[in-house]
Image (cartoon, rainbow, N blue to C red):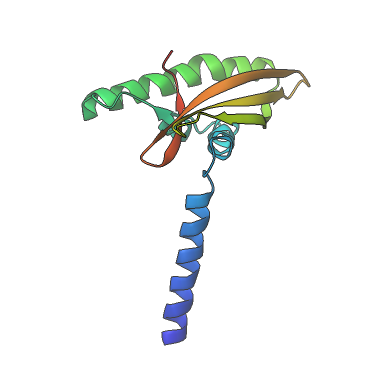
Length: 135
């Protein structure tokens, strides 16, 4: 019984370490969020967006619901026209000197073979890289 307990603890520790290290850089975090977008899991993708700290819980919930609806209604339909979003490649990442902001250059590949490059600003909050939508 003790062996099973210790083995379970070891497995849980490995999963926790993998989860913590999976978004240790802004590029890693962007890749994780991109995979949610590719899968059409807009709720999880939106969880990766940095929203205002001063907002109330209800306001945050409302904002996130609005983002999800926008993605589903507009962006999802655009992806469909292009044969879906096939992959997103991280081309580069540039972290600021203070280590709290970054710019990630990405390349999106669509089902019809078209590609598009762009950048995504990232911000570090509570040790976690999030997508910034502030201008």
